[in-house]
Length: 105
Image 1 (cartoon, rainbow, N blue to C red):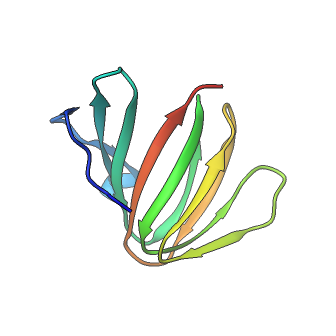
Image 2: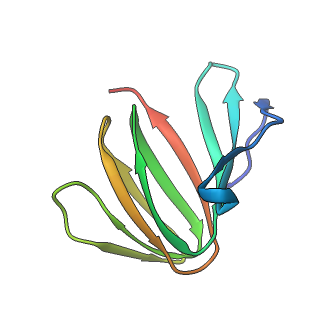
């Protein structure tokens, strides 16, 4: 799978969460769509969504829990989708590289 993006604008300022344990940078495509590329260090986190999200894990090991669901594990590469306007939990076990895409409803 090609994991490079072309013709994008990259935000200089990083998004920093949980005292720097989770960071990302926003990239915007020519059509106005955007993604964030980030790194999560080991820890337990809870995030909220405004839009539906596709979380692509490029490398790392974590467990995630969506609302009203059991914990699921990704070890290496994987994908999961998060509905809009919910909170979800992550237990990150190793440094995890991710791409978050924001999807139309």
